[in-house]
Image 1 (cartoon, rainbow, N blue to C red):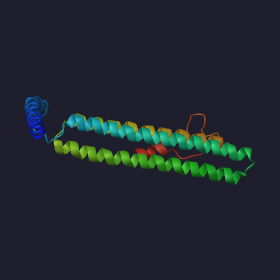
Image 2: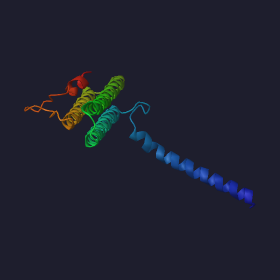
Image 3: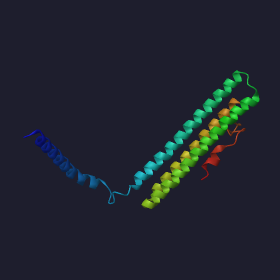
Image 4: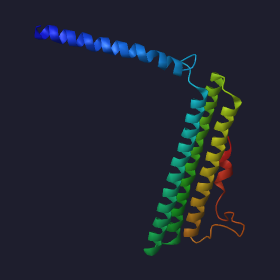
Length: 184
């Protein structure tokens, strides 16, 4: 056989093996899918939604923690350099504003993703329990962002010498951000 004929025969054999493998695998793939392979499994959609919501909250909490630590360190640095109180207050206000912005943005993302997920689950005719799991993930995530923002704001207030909390543990110098963030 010439070189061209050998290559053609080799290609034909590879194509035949590939087609045979595809035909053998096709029944397994079809049996593993639901009746309508184009329609996603509502359980998987709910799971992805919950993971996405928790991931968004984790990112917001991480950014809030980083911001509060950087702000507290910066205020300490400014104090060590003898900065006047108005400069310290401005640094604290910038940190507080950034924390509130991060928390608010995180809450907005979570609320938007929750609405989108609930719409998809409704379109799929999902069980109400799946929608409830998404709503529970939303509530936990919004609460965790609010708590993280509150801790960051209290840390900044304390670094400015305000104490940051009364005897009951409630902030005495800052607004409580958690309640406003949980609002839908």
